[in-house]
Amino acid sequence: MSNESLDPRVNRLKLGEAGEIVKVEEGENWNIYEVFHQEKRGAHHEHVGCVHAPDPQLALVFAKEQFGRRKKCVNLWVVKSADILAFDVEDEDMFANNLEKTYRDASGFKVMEKINKFKQSK
Image (cartoon, rainbow, N blue to C red; front, side, top):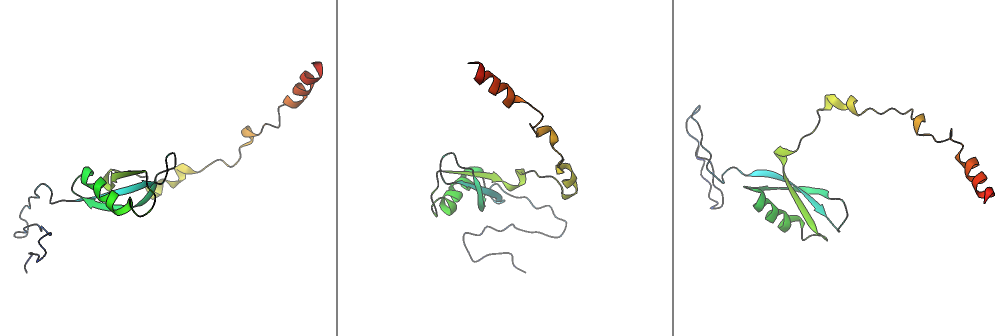
């Protein structure tokens, strides 16, 4: 089976026999970068998609071409997908909240009485 491509833009790895070590040359292994888009200054960056690129600088250029011209854009972020960390699904109990939050209730304070007394004393 041939591993050659008729497309001149495609640079395929030269695979040898099974068990043989494959050496990947610089630029042959493109990474996936997640793209975040900001519509206006001060707004949050939102995830809009991903691009494949050999390095972060080219990923930023690809992101601008792909996502920066479709709608209003003032800034783009690109992050290598492999660099994004997340908790495992099994750790979801770590985010359980205490629904009983009476310590936030300010009803125990008699501040209004003090304010009204202060206003009357003036």
